[in-house]
Image (cartoon, rainbow, N blue to C red; front, side, top):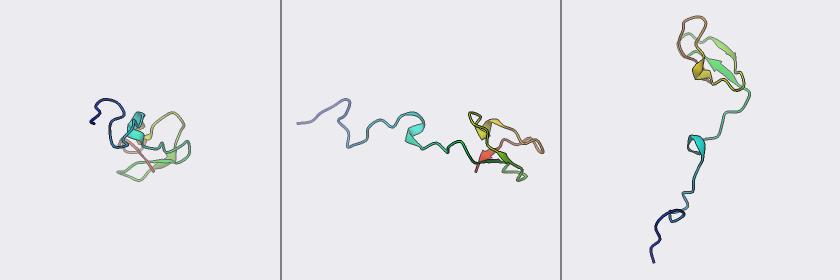
Length: 62
């Protein structure tokens, strides 16, 4: 018997927001990939939304 619809997959249930990827947490550092400038990560503000104060490049999470 074949089942179609929700729950019929091979154990692939819903993973929620961001595809089930674990969040990086409150700590860490934001780093500029261009010049290497670093600053502490601020909670509730993703690093990619910040611009490096030295060169203007968007920062990434380390």
